[in-house]
Length: 102
Image 1 (spheres, rainbow, N blue to C red):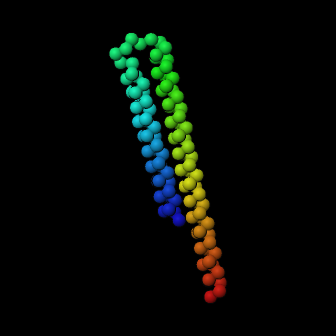
Image 2 (image 1 turned 45 degrees about the horizontal axis):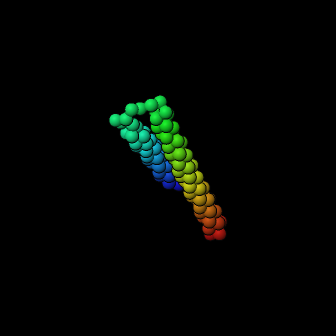
Image 3 (image 1 turned 60 degrees about the vertical axis):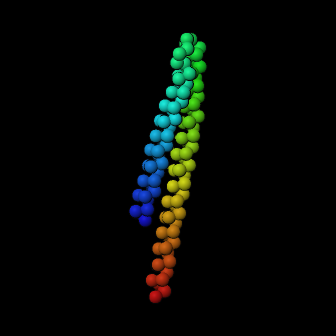
């Protein structure tokens, strides 16, 4: 049982770090796209505010997506661990009954 928990924790960490990398890359892409449009233009304060607002909104949406992915992953892994614990307890009960009936 001990090794399987380590595996699930490792899987959760991989999901966590990969989602952080996805978030980082998408935020960089969003900022690049937003400010690339401003290159070569006469930039006003309104255009800058609009670009910053776009990036802020995009970061918010992607943050919500990342949190949903992480919470879902955590819930699934905790469910799997509880199933493993239940199976282990059932196995102990079956072994104990076999030993007592012998």
